[in-house]
Image (cartoon, rainbow, N blue to C red; front, side, top):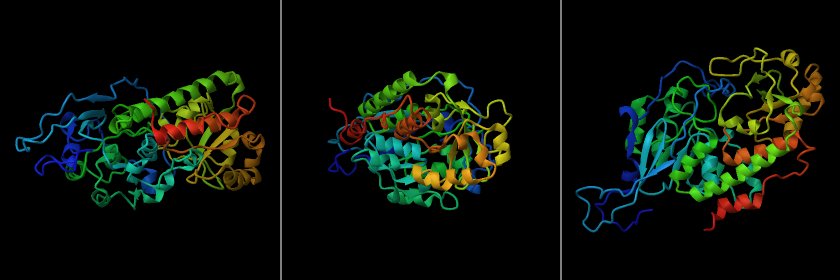
Length: 421
């Protein structure tokens, strides 16, 4: 960070961090504004899933474009001021943001981005979360020295999202896709975004957890695409690459040991809540960061060719037990807003209820003991590692008899101590 003893008339850290190169003449590009779709954040209903696979082919772009040297900031800068080194990070829909130093405080919106900051050793910089209950942190308990003060995060949702918390946090960066505020919640307009950007700090982020929002007509990023961008923001390339190495090793190991496709059960991913009497279907075959770990396991979608669409902003259809029995999936992945439940609590509150149900007890998945927690909706890089391990050992115990596929100490050391040169 910049030296606090710099000349009083030199540009401040905040002045540098507020600079953003704007795409298309506005703060946000690529927003088509489907403003009348209901969302669960406003209605209290379950999260929409990324039911429709995105057909567009992503084109790789550089993660960060280093600026050779920022020009001496202003004509009024003190003659003794030392020019700063700056760096640029580009991410749709905002475009390019220039930083002269690593942001000390960052305001994320969804838990996937908070998990990225934790993974990169910058969990203390995180200032916010839109709902604390949607941020699952049990996996940190398995990583020595890794934790986050969940209660210390400002909860941005309080019957809507107001601007006041943004002023109160006074963060150096809002790690938020601004279209989530204008189109997901329909709470803000462009003038609100410009106000917060100009008075507080820039935005940078992209909704990655699902791919069903009509307004998201710009590039989607995979989980590790977005993780790489965040690593560029906090200048943690080595940590990112070390965690990516663990990820790639795990994916390769699991892939090499999976049974043949005809030996893998299909799965119905649903939102059911605790003691469920109806289910809202997701599509396991859809894209989005919150399903990447299922694709690693090669699970097929039980709803394929059934005519059942996934839950989305426009489709709120649910299935009762009779309709679920017609599909009769090999396995069930049940998401609840209590996904932080332990396996034991999930068995007591969800699985036992299904076993006792006169129709639910007839489901193949229930009878054969293949009812699993559905995993977090906002899945970050650390979430993904533990989800791969959880489902590999849960679905295929014969192939993955060991309890742990991840070296906890190695991963924790990268997060807490960094990477040795």
